[in-house]
Length: 397
Image (cartoon, rainbow, N blue to C red; front, top):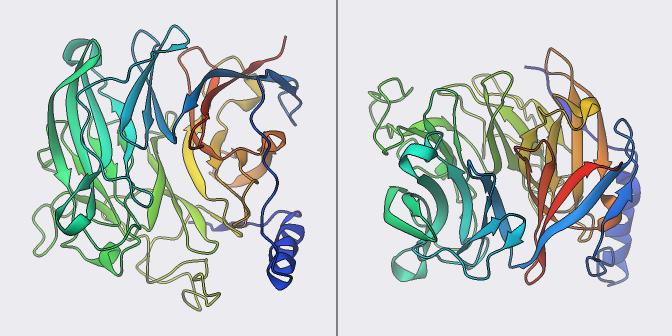
């Protein structure tokens, strides 16, 4: 698979700011003013004149979005709340019955996915950090039935291993074209991502009731956990079913550089921590050669890192020029606070990158999530402690 390393012209100036700031003992980052009331009318390269407006705000570290069949919106907040936005208005009270979460580090309540047959069964799936013994946390997957404003019959389908520390506690969940449940688990914990008896640093594949599919790649392999679909992942913050190809796409954060997009193949090993295009935070390379026989190479690599989070493919009719484009949120670029944005990536029919665009840079927000709504508009979450917001992008008429 072809590897595309993405280094924009603006990178040297950002890196210069980083190193100069350190040399003179200055703080690093771009000033971030409070998010205004909006809306904002902006121009973009191929879809001219878009309007960005605030749907809801006052959220605490919002993490994920899911649309219900009635087009109301579920939003998770990392401190452990599941919120409902009904007819464009945020309900004042959270949905009750959510799991107890551990919020230290990057843990908490994270992703949410709606069962494809929600209208019949009412099931939703949540990834979260489960509190464990000795103050540790473990990425977990739970399923419950949404009845009105209450989550009932909640039960865990997966509880991974708990390690000391606050790294790698994240997880995503998505349904595949095969109706199976795919869950990612954080792998920034030693060599766990390469350990076939560990569920950390993996993408898991389950039936919707948590049992093992009969065609999982390691189902009958000795000393392999049968849930494993792929391994060798660091911190996956994007997981989706590609609506046009039926493939599962995933992206993960590298260490100091080396964020990457992967198209998942059953049984594939994506290399962490054996190989990476990034560097350790000390500045040392992870390895001399990031490509190795027997390990999958990424579709796309970011150098420097953009702290990628959230992924969507646009399929609607509201933005004809964006059809088939991939949208990815960025929490910050090159490790510099205040540089979060939205990226639009154009691929050709051979899944080779043709061009990209950095969008919403004027807002200086950490973009945690991006989804296409049933109305064909794009919805984003900004990651802030007390005034996180749900934003909507629509054509400016």
